[in-house]
Image (cartoon, rainbow, N blue to C red; front, side, top):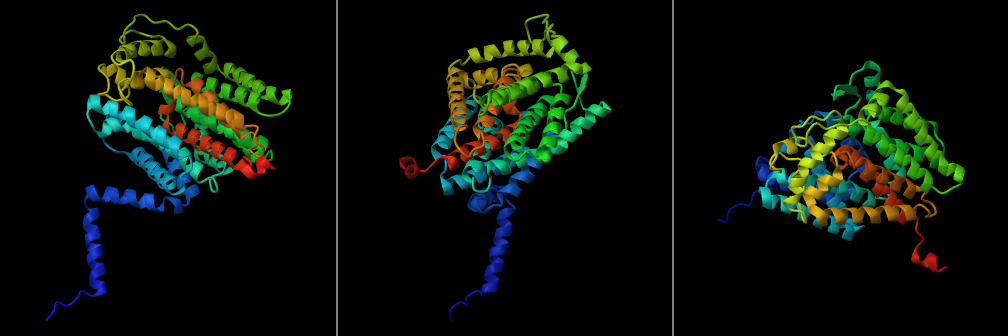
Length: 446
């Protein structure tokens, strides 16, 4: 007699058993989960998804181990980064908005990640920085490909909400003289790993709150949130963060369309922030200390009496790393991993200048191409501010980018991952808003 066919119930039970067995192996489970996210990316409720993941990222920013950059293990921030990349790829495959720029950026990241791997071996450690930077780009890709859901209004509200608890905590830290001890001073850091990191996020949140107040109906809630973020930024007593915020306000004021009085409003606001900062004892003390920077010797073991002098020593020790490979550098992440540089002291302390970091990691070729791409981005943002219906969104985007460029002179701006995520969200929304507001080819001919 022929063999009896298995019943449908038995067949389903076998499938379930096999599925359970497969998921017990990380080798099979990880690719399956990745394929699942790629498949459902278009159907995900993106606003709750981004809101929850970014909120978790903000609230746990200071929980990551200081040695996480020097470890090949995966942590919560790594999983969030991978989720962003998967969702971005899924949306990009289905909607193909901004495909070629993303491909170029992906090739750029892949090239310099492979350079790091060729010099230090293929591992999670050597791929970590490339994946992290790809996750930042991924957020802009998500917003750009889901502009029908993630408008600039929605994105700016998300940025406001995910960081407001951290800003309130920073104010509480100031009132209770708690926070993070840095160089003998206690400075507010909210839930962020460092006050400088917090200052950048608070600066971006201040700008989006200002834009919402000016262009979305002068709502009191936006004004209140903006004041909270502004005060929180001051409480970090980050000179680089404050300088970046001042530049953002000035550039936004000068680029926004309107009368001269409106343009000078940003400059006046920047002046008031400087006065408020100098009136605080710690702010005045920090400015006085940095104005008298001294370095006692010219090596990494030399003593520096200020953060500026320490940075000069740091950059000096990184120059030999660049000279070893001046054109293409050592590869992405090599200045921030323990095995990435020949001097362990260099790896244990971050470069504190994105220009120096990219010079060492990507060489002259990589740094020039990166700056060229940023120049193109700023020019596009600045030109789009005059597009009808965008509410000067281009001025907001350009102001944030220019402010971060100033901050990057003496800070690890792009290494502040959560702040970079917020920036990528806003820039992606600004770019998509300018595309939506442009007239169709038929309308141009009419």
